[in-house]
Image 1: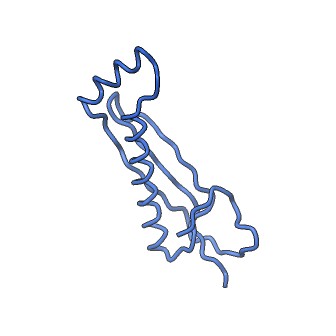
Image 2: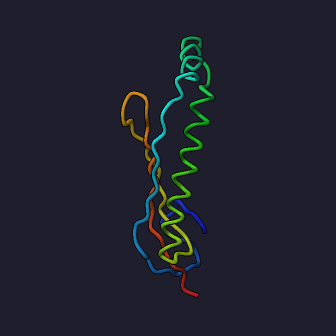
Image 3: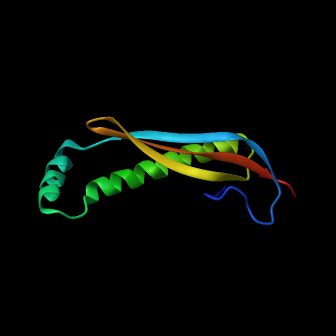
Length: 104
């Protein structure tokens, strides 16, 4: 499955199949949260959170790809990511785009 953030694929004609999405909600680990709180005081990258969000993006992307595959898509174009806080200890990652079938 090809994934593009651009709205068109140069040199390719396609038919849109519909919007596809993927999402996941991740919560913070209470124990890693203690260490990250100290890191927040002294500064620097919060690596446990960076890893958590990378895992969430990958999971959400895989779910979007599964939806596109069910539609018979060759690619997803116009892909965008968004995040939101669900509650103090959890964040949602949402990915969406348009599933397309290339003309052969």
